[in-house]
Length: 174
Image (cartoon, rainbow, N blue to C red; front, side, top):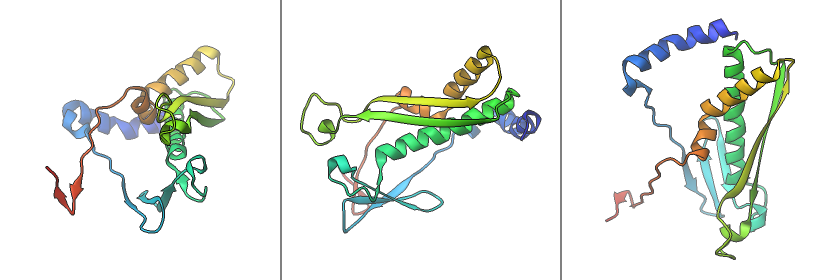
């Protein structure tokens, strides 16, 4: 897909959102169910069933997906798609790219071993290896716009409003 085709595809969508901001609000959902035999959660991905379990550093077998890995994979996927879309829109000569994400965790926090150890990633590093001859100022623009428009990156960098609820046997709890 080239810049003209991308812009033509997105133009009516952008116009509709400008005319009615409510049309741009979409609720995405993920659903999973706990496994009755092991400490795992079966997550419906829309394509296949993914089974998430404990990371080996917390006693897991390593056979199930780790949710921390899944978060990094979602970041790589979103950043890669965003990078490609932005490059296409900018008519940026990008022959190829590799996107990597890595994050540092202190599992003492997750296991409740040390109260001063955070639960979650301390640091996440997102990197792009670009196959391009474009000048540095265009590379900088590409990265700035990729960061700005990557949904997963923005979500983890600017904490969204969060809510947790529970129902018991299909009924709301008081």
